[in-house]
Length: 309
Image (cartoon, rainbow, N blue to C red):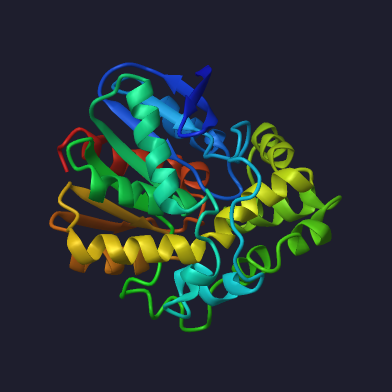
């Protein structure tokens, strides 16, 4: 079993799972996950690596920023679902939320520093992908290799086909007027989380202990509100990504992985801004790659992290 540790960083306290020894690998989860989404992957990496898997700020057992962040328009989140929409949406809502991808990247850097880690490979899925990308772009001396999967990077070109029918419905729901989604879902969290877990594994679902852990992590109005804050910060995250790629390229070796539904969209976004990019789509695999097809993921991950692919 991994060691669980509380680590103060960047004004919050992160719940962090640590296991193994060797070159460090930092794993960043998405929604509706906690660090436990990486359970099977950690077991396949700890013979060669120190694996570091935090709950993102406000998720799971990690604390969130102090109340009062974010004062923009209540409807601005609709302008930047998946980071799309009006170019100025980020100025209307999200700035100062404390949940944007740039702040999450700062958390990751501070966590590595607190643990005494001077170099790490970084792996992100879903909401963990934008901060992983920004960290690697900003700190190529800190990030040894980058793996990102099943997400988009704001409004960067390349995802037009994926977004042709509009972004997934829950982005607008989660980013709507603060408190709306929480009011609708309170008392029905288990059914809601089950929908994502089943859809993300193409109907197969996840093991009951993991399912129960995820449901606990997202039960209650406060837990839901912290999770949805990252969606309400999408305009800010998109703006940060655009500013970052305007002045820098991604120079670290990078692997983009897709499944259903994102496929090759993330790889296409990365291609114009990345010097060394490998892309793969995992067949017959749902969105939650680490739980649905962990063996296929490890087959790609282990040689890439070792520098052999």
